[in-house]
Image (cartoon, rainbow, N blue to C red; front, side, top):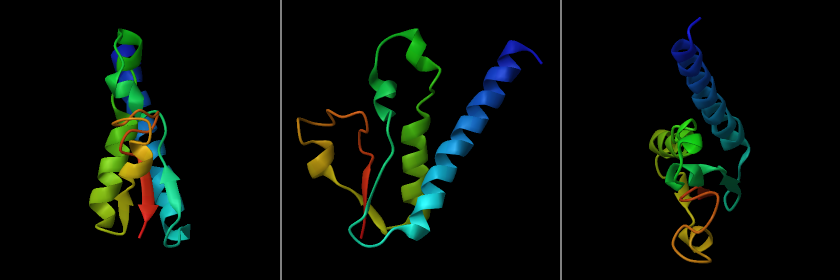
Length: 97
């Protein structure tokens, strides 16, 4: 397997793992519970070393919110507690409604 193919396979597995995490916790959550998808901040960090994360945490959150409708909401009070999205989980503090 070539390097590009390995990277593509690794990205696919990481996307799947992030999605499986939110899919696992969703049915177990009750109103008021939180799910936090960490490391979305890497999408905004400079440097090639962060490009390998390919915005997976943020994509997983976006896909999850699209799939679950209005069952969850982004808690902007927590995301923006120290300033707009000054957190390792930007727009990823999700509260079950």
